[in-house]
Length: 248
Image (cartoon, rainbow, N blue to C red; front, side):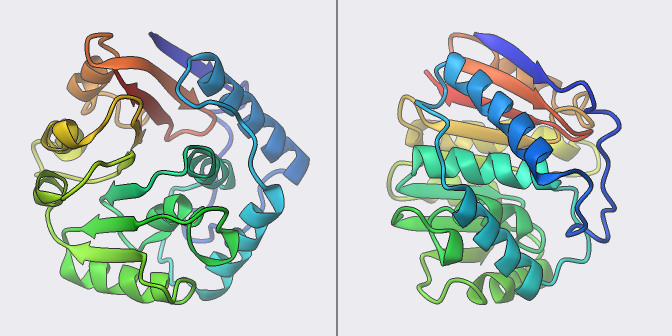
């Protein structure tokens, strides 16, 4: 089943990419729109419920704002909350995020398992960044809030990491870039490399489902095919968007 959640202000809800900590809406409004998006995921059968600890999310947000070096990011507060909440609800034993730049998108996922926002214990939270300098910065950032090493960064190709991972991947987050020709189309290559490691019900998050929809057309067709995923919902509450899918 393919579906869509679209807020009325999705195209005007814009942040300053260079100053991501500035609030651009009231907290109650942010919570409400994310709650409705989570409800759409529950209705689709992708997640079992929409309950998560709001205070832990804010503790996570504060720690990232205080300690992370973030040159820029397109992750709005709405998107940060949604990604954190999906991880908090699903509580994947193993989570892999491919294409994590400075680590902000990665920790939005892993923050449900490590640091001040932790609400469960994971075995592995792995962020993959192909550019060594960015991977090193992401690792430095992550270490500021996770001394355990459960969350860690690999300077590698996401395709190789998911293909060679020893175990099941409960949640896969995709935000990588391929070549100049493929761009975000590399999502499908990563997903197919991970496919045999994803159990039924595993959740797949794909950022840029709106602003990179053209490059993602083959990926979106794959996850929206009921032969591959039991459900897939395009969450559109900011100009980037997030496709949320569950493996069949």
